[in-house]
Structure formats: structure tokens, C-alpha cells
Image (cartoon, rainbow, N blue to C red; front, side):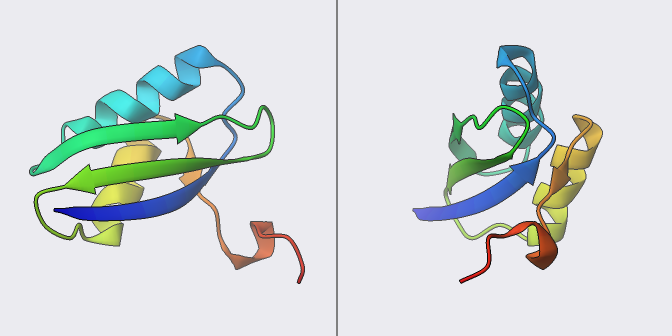
Length: 78
């Protein structure tokens, strides 16, 4: 089992959570998706899978749902 955490921008509601969860869940090997919604901010998406996932596949699934993985400029300054 592998667990990875991603940051997703643009999500604002439960429908957003459902769309992202559905698209990521469709990736081969994914067994669980948990979203910590931050309305209008950067949400955290934790993905559990049988093996490690290619980040570009996750980015594609998030894009298909209408959102984007957060880039370095979206992260808070240390």
C-alpha cells in the first residue's frame, strides 16, 4: 500500500469533492481518496493505492474534474 498527499486548488463545495474523488478513484490501483476541503483555498487530497501513483496521472484526473494540483507558488511561505 502507498499513501500520497496532493494539494488541489479551486475546490469550493461538496460537488467539487465528489468530482475530484470520482476521477482519482478511477485510476488503476486506487483504493481510497480522502479530501480535506478548504473552500476557495488549497485543499488536501490523500490517495491510498496498491502501489505508488504517477503524479502526472493524478494531475490529469484532477484536471478532468476541473481543478488543478497546487504549484509551489500556491503553498504558504515558510
